[in-house]
Structure formats: structure tokens, C-alpha cells
Length: 116
Length: 114
View 1 (tube, chains in turn blue, purple):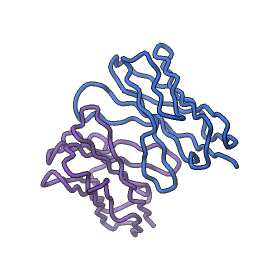
View 2 (spheres, one colour):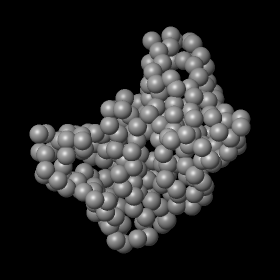
View 3 (tube, chains in turn blue, yellow):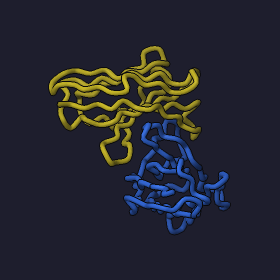
View 4 (cartoon, each protein chain N blue to C red):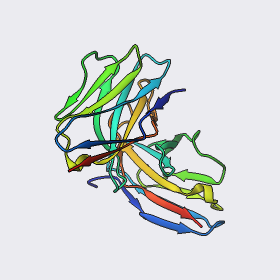
């Protein structure tokens, strides 16, 4: 079974600054995917960024980037130039790579607050 | 539709009542998932459908929970004889094939059992 751990229940950052959210995971799988989802108060999970485990290059999406350390089983999210709209709950999630219908395993979440 | 739609958005049930939660996935999406999210926690997997077939129901917490997707589109999650511990947000997600393609989530139904 897979486990995902987010050790920071809450984080805060000043607008325009950079913040990093931590995530570690445990798995015996070699083929898998990792995700960061954002959940604003509306409750809808929104995909922020995705990383395939077989890719060594860290994924980047505009102001969002990851630091994927496969050997250490670490997958942190860096948000640059933080904006007020980034305030939300952030979840790290694991997806096994083989087989259809593979379910997402989520961490406990990190509440990020961007202060003006 | 444009996105995954769930109804109702909020449901208050008296303990012991039966409830039915509806999910309308994105048109053409083969895979459909239900997750349960307790307050302050990450979502946890309940069950998975590929078209009308329920291929995995290992996450359903008890036999009071039942899900169906009879025509391979709309799905209903039913909870019988609700208990206080059933209070949570129930999220539905759909994906085009389920083979590692992006899952799109609805806004969830917040169930409160009093």
C-alpha cells in the first residue's frame, strides 16, 4: 500500500514571495505518478501539477514547480510570486502507474494562506 | 457537460435516515470514482466504476454504503441508516479512460448527520 505524508498542516506567505510545500511518500512501485491538487473553499479539487516518476526532469507549470527526489521519495511544491488567489488547501497525491482505475492516495493537506 | 456536477451540494440527514448523492460525470468519461473527505483530512477512496461495472469497492466503509452507475454515466452513492461518522464531503471524479489520465473532480456534497 502507498502512503503520502504532508508534515505541514499550515503555511503562510506574503504576497509576491515564494513558498515551498513538502510531501513525502512511500511505495514499492517503480511506475507511478505524483500530483499536487489545490482545494479552495468551493471544495473542488483542481490539478496544479503532475509528475511522472520515470521522468527525471522536474515538472513546471507557470509559477508552480516541483522538486522531485525519487530516491528520497520526496515531492515538494514551490509556488513563486504568490498571489492572494493561491490561498487554499493543497494536497499531494500518488497514483499507481499500472492498471486502469488506479485510485489516488492523498496526503493530509497543507492549508496555505497568502497574506497581502 | 462542462464539468463534473454533484447534487445536492449540502445535505443534512437525521441519524438513521437513508441518503442518495448524485454525480454527473463529464460526458464520455469512462471512469468514475467516489471519495470521502472527512473534515480537515485528505480524500479517501471509496469505489471505482469503469462504464457501468463497479470494478473496485474496497474503500466502502460498511455494507450501509452502496454505489451504482447503471447506464455508465450518472452515478449514485447511497448511504443507508446514516450515522454521525458518515458526516463528510463526498467527492466524485471522472476521467476519460482511467489509465493514468487526469481525474476531474466535482464540488462535492457535504453531508451532515445530526
